[in-house]
Image 1 (cartoon, rainbow, N blue to C red):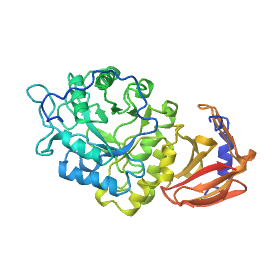
Image 2: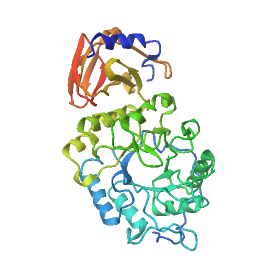
Image 3: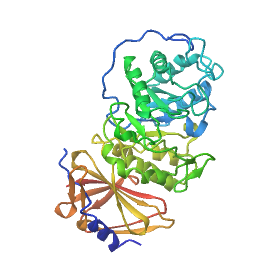
Image 4: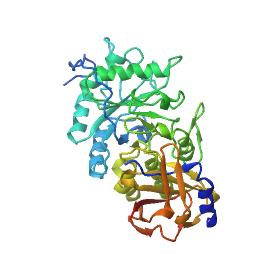
Length: 422
């Protein structure tokens, strides 16, 4: 139970964390059609975290054109596009097991009988952007041809198909230097003259947050996620990380997050088997982190609860805030954490996360809270002003910061508030 412990915890940590609002037509396998030989400088391709959908979490390599066209249609009709999602990304398994005689990648004709350019056109005609997958090694994680030694050839092919996003994995890389391998593909993409968002899926092994700004627009910070809230899943030779395991690795690198260089906490598992509360907590925390949002559920038959999570525009707006500041964690008693995220217009998002296996009672005296963030130079003293509170999941007012705030939080659930100064 949390009563006085909450305020005491905040005050005890006031010297560590503070918040101050001073900031204001190509056939597959043939040579690609000509593309402009203009080298793009580092652009503004992802001023806010990219939002989209990826095939892997639900379908792995079991994909084909009819299934995916149905998914594109559901992407639009479900409200995902209207909520701000834009990228439709094919993960591993879209190509033939070997390159053609000229060294070109070939879309599997059984899976894509009309070729990849035709499928990309279908995606674009729905008002979406098209993404594709490959790997820095000799082979992809599923054993298909990787891009090692073919980076410029592959980049030109992708540009000729109309690719807008490349997810670039790290399997079968042997002794490759990660930074140099990703710089090579980054340069190849820029040489095409087509703006292509570059997603570095290097798993965080070589600390890409230290060097990937300007190389790509987003970079994975951990290994692969699994649809478990707090228990990792052993996969034989490797271990998939739970939502909480990944979340715990983000505070130490939050200062490297921002427009056009996003810490990628991996794809969303919303709708893939966790409870409603866990899905809501998962989505809330990724939005608090300003993380890229890549849904990975079956869009054709998602439940109303799943849809209500993924398309909650008020929560999505927290993720898409133009400041791009990742939230800061304040640990509290009884397995409840408080995460604080500065927003534009001197607003702030606060998320209470209950990691315990039982419900918790909050009793907060807002005036006792002083939160300080030395990383960003921001400072918040709630005793110096009154803020209105809006519950972003209930979509209603929750009063102001005058007096106390009392509410129960279910196990593995969140309370997410937006605060606006009066």
